[in-house]
Length: 210
View 1 (tube, rainbow, N blue to C red):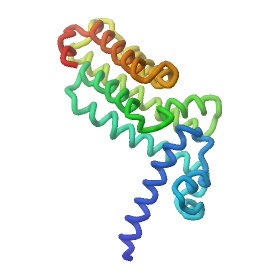
View 2: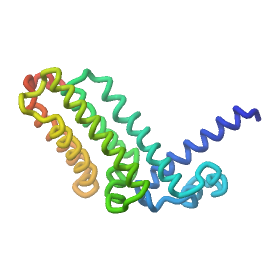
View 3: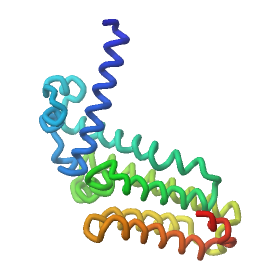
View 4: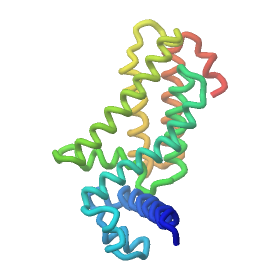
């Protein structure tokens, strides 16, 4: 096999491992993740995985990167295809709820779970997760600010406050769905944001087809 062929095979193995590790992390917790656990789930040797990640922390950081890439592909990119403004902000929320509904990850939301798990545990993992949350909230606030700049929001609507509202509904929905039932919980999460956006939007008809 050529060197290029080995590299391709190595990247495919790495991707498959990270996908499985991401799934396991939403069930067992990011701290509960280990090379042995991932190796057993995939039916491969731990030594083979050790060639990619020399420590548990290195694997955890790689899983965070994998989760971010998955979120970008399944939530952010589809939403960015929608015209900017209030409709795009709604699309992010809608795609997020659709991602949860599809049960791509059995434990619900990787980031929500990991934040609760590491919030009180200073260190490299907590710092990386804090950076991801800051970036996400900056993104949502930017979308809300874009809507304000387009003249779609009523005077006095705070973009950061609107972003916080969107995030709160998303986190609350994924945390309550296993207990209160997925269908009614996710329907409520969509309905609540749609009603709020219509209340703060100058022209609510732009959301009528949503």
